[in-house]
Length: 366
Image 1 (cartoon, rainbow, N blue to C red):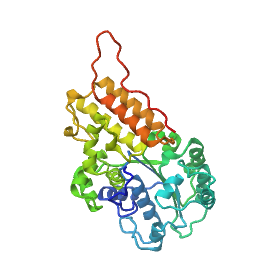
Image 2 (tube, one colour; image 1 turned 135 degrees about the vertical axis):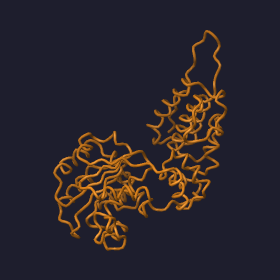
Image 3 (tube, one colour; image 1 turned 120 degrees about the horizontal axis):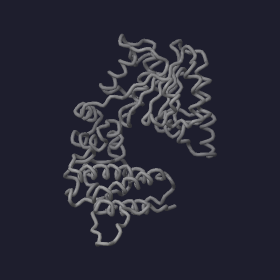
Image 4 (cartoon, rainbow, N blue to C red; image 1 turned 60 degrees about the horizontal axis):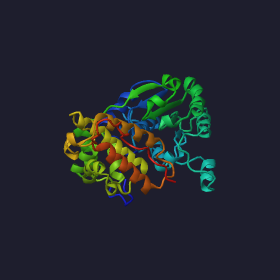
């Protein structure tokens, strides 16, 4: 979240699967089906597991349990992003982030600065995937199509996939991975075998984060900051979020201190403030916070009431929908922290006067 160079670089997501994902993948490999839908909240490893599945399907020397060997030509082709029987369908922004090649025309458009990378799965890419599914396999191990995040298909793109999912060519298998299954068309969901991602145990996830290179204390704190989702915790670490800084954010928000959030993008600031709001509601009602610990907050009696906090929660949700607009980030951040202070601190109201709104709408800074 900081503009400074992160002190931690997360390992690539196509490395060895964590134990809890490996077991889930092995269970799916024993089942028959041409299309899997991996669903669950962010940070549970949908993409890593989807890639593990397609690597295993295409492997030329699979292990007795069905998993990929990791050293055949097919496994190498997946690793270097050149396997002729694998089609990866993602938004262009995601392809770039995960080092997958773009189509020739798309790459030329971006190189010529005709447009920006798409944040949705484009209909042209879906048509290419459908055409790919109808080809003959190059390595006689069938073909695979990986779609992630599947919720980035709009209705037009999703409808272009439907017939192929319903009547797939004989040697192609699909895996769709999503962090928002409710956004998928019901017709897409009904044509796939669904798997809900399992949550790892807290100590298991923390141990895995330490194996990725995080200090044990930071791993535990960032895992809590991510709500128990290990891949989200790893992302927070790679964004430069330090455990000690994370603990300071609730008090900083209560005081409206912008400096504690310096370097946050609007979307990252809103994400942190939504977690603060969520936990403030829990603290106010006497419950245990999820993303922080009670000591990170002012005493419950110093926090605003339920109505004031829930109005702030709704305002943050509205702000989130426009967070990627070209705001002047520093002014927008000041406005967000002003909202936070007004929402978190209780206010006395003179008798006979109507209560003022808990928060003011976020201004648009361009």
